[in-house]
Image (cartoon, rainbow, N blue to C red):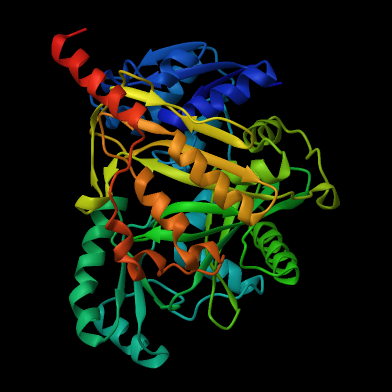
Length: 472
């Protein structure tokens, strides 16, 4: 049985994994760079080790991290998300050193990380895919010929991309010619490989993904879907489970598609199969994420299943505890990515010291975060500083509880996306439960908000400023 896990990550997801380990009676080991010396995951883990002065490279050196896992007596490693979580090299090094990798095998990571290979696997499995290239593009001339055949608009995508990077929409041949080298360059810089492919652009789709769990004994189930349509520049902002936009028949259909997709590639552990739903209610496979998703929390809220603990059990060689018919969903849950950004200033990052932090609470409220009063947000990492997850029995109740909870959550010292989310929740189109990935671009007026603070918050802010000035 797994007794000690090294967490090859930082921030809120590292804290989340520490909590799962503690409930299972498993020791946790954190890693950190000099920039993260005072981070919450360092304080929460049973042990913590410095991996160098460079704020980023330490989290990206698979050999160093696995050597540390061995030296500290760990028998397993959890990659979290981001960094090396979808790098097959980390899984391979773990296997060579006798460390259990809490995730899929390197073959699955490599196959599904290559978007062209993933498309080919899905086509063989009978999963509908967006019309496009069945191999990497050789040059812009090949891209032009394919675009002319399937019709504009089209999407140029990095074959090994992820996280919303390396993607460009092209509405005509001129834009395709202009963007081709840009996407190749972005792919090379961000992912180390220049390969790109082309797909038909599904206009104003809904972004629906399905959480799956698969063990090494041939069992595979889904935990229903999440709606990730509220996004900006292909980066998710708000995630909802289950989707308020699907019928029960669609829910059952997409769940079965996701399980079939996972089985087709021999997938083991937790994964997410992502789909686009077009205006004609046709689902298309988009990609499979071979890791824990940022938004796994909303699925946990509606099913009551701890996905991180299930990941650990699967890596331990245990069979799934549940059959598909055992899985039920109750109510609705919504996750807000609390980013240290200034929405009024093109969402520029807002790093610095958090002078005061008031966490929300009450029924159906969960915060997964790594911040505290006095914490200094370093400028080297992603701007997400916490995740606010709200649950309610009904969609209308979820909207109202989320508004109350966003008012309760107060972060001083940096700008955040909290006030922007209030505007989204008050928008009639969003409240109706009918929205697409074009929602944010279609509503620039939502950025024209005024920051409203209750009188007691204003007094607290003034007091904090005085205290900071006096060095108290």
